[in-house]
Every structure is written in C-alpha cells, then in structure tokens.
Amino acid sequence: ESVKLWGGRFSGSTDPVMEKFNASLPFDKIMWKQDIQGSIAYAKALSRANLLTEDECNTIIEGLETVRNEWAQEIFETQPQDEDIHTANERRLKELVGEVGGKVHTGRSRNDQVAVDMKLWLREHLTEIGEHLTILARVLVGRADREKAVLMPGYTHLQRAQPIRWSHLLLSHAWPLVTDLERLQELYSRVNVCPLGSGALAGNPFHIDREQLAQDLGFRSITENSLQAVSDRDYVVEFLFWSSLVGSHLSRLAEDVILYSTREFGYIKLSDAYATGSSLMPQKKNPDSMELIRGKAGTLAGNLCGFLAVLKGLPSTYNKDLQEDKLKMFETASIMKGLLQVAAGAVETMEVDAAACQKGLTEEMLATDIAYYLVKKGMAFRTAHGKAGEVVKLAEELGCPFSKIPLSELVKVSSLFADDVSSVWNFEHSVEQYEAAGGTALSSINVQITKVTAFLDNF
Ligand code: ARG
Image (cartoon, rainbow, N blue to C red; front, side, top):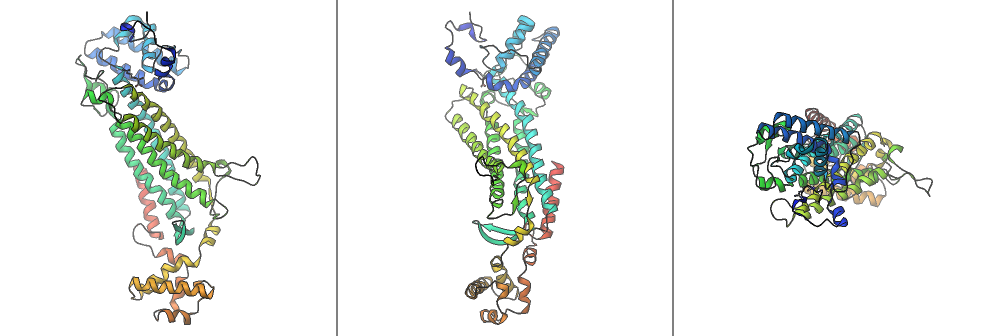
C-alpha cells in the first residue's frame, strides 16, 4: 500500500535515492503560503461550480488555514514521502479534515498548481526587489545632488579622458536602474496572469470560473491555452534575465568603486561597514562588498544560461525538467535582495575625497578644450584637433603643463591663440561647456536629478 498521492497504479516502491532525487520539498516549501493561498481560492471556485457544498468548502478552508498556521509557527511536520509542497499540504489537509480534503484537487493538477504558486511567490518578491532597487537609485541621486561641486577625471579605456562632475558619474549609474524599474513593471504584468484552471494539460472539465478565480488571487487576467500554461516558464527566464542585467549594472558600479578606492586612484573611501581586513596584512582594507557584487553578477548570468539550457529541447507541456526552475528563481531572488541592499548601504556610506579627485585632474585632459577654443574662433574641428595635438607635443618638449607654455610659442602653432586662452586652463570652465542635455555641466546635472527623482516618486 503506497502512501503516495499518485500511488494507485504502482505496486513497487520508489528507490530511496530516487525519492530524494525527485523531491522538491526541501526547496519549494518556501512557497507554503502561496500554495495554501492558491488552494483556498481553488476550493472557492469549486464551490461556486457546485463541486463542493458550502460545508465542505468551509471545512477545507479551515483545514488549509490550520496547515498555514502550522507552517507559520514552524511546527509543520514533513514526511519522507512528501514529494513537494503541494503533496505535503494536501497530505496534511486530509489528516486534519479526512476524505473531504481529497476534493480540493478536483480538476486541478500539480502542473497548474506549481505554476500559480510560482507566480504568486514571484509577484511578492518582485515588489520587494523593486523597493530595494528604488532605494539604491535614490541613494545615487541623493549623493549626486549633494556633491555637485566635486570634479574628477573621466576615463575611457581607463585612460584619462576629460574632466567630469562626480555627480555625472553617480547619475550614470542611476539611469540604468530607472530603465531596470521600467522593465520590472513590464515583467510584473506578464507574471500577473493566472494559469490555475488549466489542469494537467487539457484544461478544466468542471466549468469553474477562471476569471473569478484569477480575480480572487489578484491576477490581472488568465492564461489562454492550457498546454502552454502548464509549461510556460518565460516569466522565470525574464526574471533571471532582468536580474542578470541589473547584476551587470551593479557590477560596473562595483568595479568603479573598487578601482577608485585603490591607493592608486584614491578618490573613494569605503566605510568600514562594507569592507573587510586581511588576516595576514594588518594595513589592508578590502572592498569585499563590491567584489561580491561583481562576483554574484556572474552567478546571476549563470542562472539565466543554466535555466535556458533546461528549457531548450523540451517537448510541449509539463516535464519534470521544469522543477529546476525553482532553484534558479529562489536563488536569484535572494541574491538580488542582498546585492541591492549592500550596494545601497555601501554607496550611501562611502566617502568621496574631493581633493584627491581634484588632484587627479591634470592639464593633459584639457587637450580637447584647446581644440574647442580654436573651433570657437572659427577653425574647422579636424584642423583644430591637429593644432591641439601640436600643443600637446609642445608641452611634452618643454616639459611643462599647457598653462605654462608662453603665448609666444602658442601663436607659432596658430595665430588664433590669444590672451583669453588662459580661460581654457580651468577645469570648472571645462565641464561647464557641456550644457547640452545629457552633459556634465551643472545645468544638465540639475535636470537629470529632477527627472530621476520624478520617476522614482511616481514609481
Ligand atoms: N514539484 C513539481 C515541480 O516543481 C510539481 C509539479 C509536478 N507535476 C508532476 N506531474 N509531476 O515542478
């Protein structure tokens, strides 16, 4: 006599190693609340379709509430035969209310049950993750607003390029998060479609009102094809992709912080709360928080690739391969929460060393500005670029910064150089040139801060 829910047609028992291999309870019990939520709504749907009397329905709901309390109080006792959260809850329900508990699964399959549980679970966690992301974006914008006066070297290819405002860099990390939040909203709306009522694959034969059922569970609509509904894990893939994209944004931020907090750059000091020391070298302060963010971004991308590989090649409808979805989804959600909170905390508490940033600015970074100076006097940019190059060479030959080159030497390069060239040797003047929308001038920074803040306030 088998105690398994599907044991009717079996005579042999499951190999113990297979039993463990097959079980998802150790990880899917995390969805205990959603599983009960789905079952209560489904019992009501059955009752509306006259498959349960009012009494039966109430008995089942009370039983399910008891099961829920057992989980909440951490006194739910799992059995070795409990395959997953669905079988565990149903087994316990029947122990509590007897045979009538067996009616809750009428027309339902674990296939549509697991799909609805996962969506209910993900919905809650997307909301929470979105909140953490919003906090991080606010931290970046807040700093950008407070530290607008700080100028620093901007880099391309990690080579000194042009002076920028530190706020512009902070905002460059906030903007991708704005787009990530937009993507999250779209993802949420696709998760928010109810698959329950699809049965194992063919649909539901008992005239249940799927629209009402979906509404009871707070979904915006229902899936339109039962075969697709039981195997659709696109929302999981999307969540894994979304997470790895956010991960790569945070990894870039982390890499900037790691570099800029080295002695070699010295622009940033991480707070002790987000750094660790060395067990051997007493002087060390390591940016572990940032390295973990960078590293976990790799794990997130791996989860995406790994799960896509699981899906590729599956035939239609439910196959047990799909059980792998939960490991990826749960791990990814938990990584995301840690990642975002640590990033927000570290960015909020780190210090920017304005003097070191200023010291990092060297006159060679004004070479472009020399060309712009000549352009403003009427020279074609391409010619001006060449002339500015000659000035760079001149400075090297004379072994002095641009500002120390005598005007008498500059006019030999171009007769357009005059006394007013002295205004070029000024980093504030340099960044203030970039006033067009999206540039590093103060006016553009202010517009960006207003826009990001407005987006976050309305999110
Ligand atoms: N534990 C399973 C999963 O996570 C639930 C669905 C099982 N369905 C089935 N017919 N074996 O995917």
